[in-house]
Image 1 (cartoon, rainbow, N blue to C red):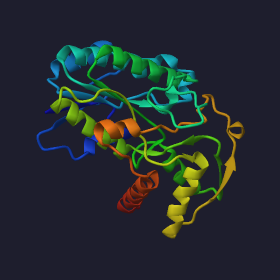
Image 2 (cartoon, rainbow, N blue to C red):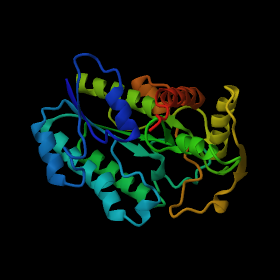
Image 3 (cartoon, rainbow, N blue to C red):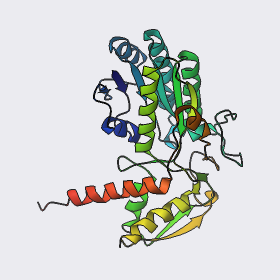
Amino acid sequence: MRILITGITGQVGYELCRYEWPEDVEIVAASRQELDLTDAGSIETYIAEGRFDAVINPAAYTAVDRAETDPVTAWKVNALAPAVMAEATRKVGIPLLCVSTDYVFDGTKAEAYDEGDPIGPVGVYGASKAAGELAVRTGNPRHAILRTSWVFSAHGANFVKTMLRLAADRPLLRVVDDQNGCPTAASDIAATLARMALRLVADPKAPTGTYHFSNAGPVTWCGFAREIFRQQAALGYAVPKVEAITTADYPTPAKRPANSVLGVEKIGRDYAIRPRPWQEALSEVLSELRLEQRKSPEEPR
């Protein structure tokens, strides 16, 4: 079995590459130099000639604020690239799995969002991802779109690493406390995509469509930060005080959904995947970051 993975420098792509795949699975991890996601012809040719059994596309333009002033690039990567992938994978008869986002919703719903809820993105990033979803749905019937939220890991840029970096020299951190969501470990997203891909390849009748996946338990960004530092403090690390603020206190170029909580019942029914609590996943990521820090001390020059 041969599976193509895009976006290998991103959090989910990185975790997919180090996932413990079955021995009979060959992973083709395409770099940006090998597969230019802003070049439709490059994508089509790469998939047509690759002899793949499935394509997993976690690649995305995720700079939410920068997208407001760089919409062309955001739409090329988040909408046009999935459209070309969908058509190319349909032509060779293989499934396509794409990662999407909570930002396709406007965040005004009081309860968790289900897969069938109307979308209503409020910014360029969310709109481009919503367009990518539509392209995949219409381009290849054998698809799985996995919406997720608040991704974190020991790799790349994310909220956990930002909090730890800021805490190094600030005794007080002010963090937004009126946006709700579910933090999600990139490793758990990768494991979910892997399970879905293997089943879609093995079973032509496997369920397809749009799914939600996030780690269990809603929280605010402020609550997320406090849990990061609670776990660090429990191990004897000095931690800052975290002060709650409102979204209005921290203006950004792109508007954020006030509610990003995703309902995950459907993926449990169709694929028997039931997310673990985000606090448990956070503990693993913090442990990995501490291990990396111990392994790479500064060398004298």
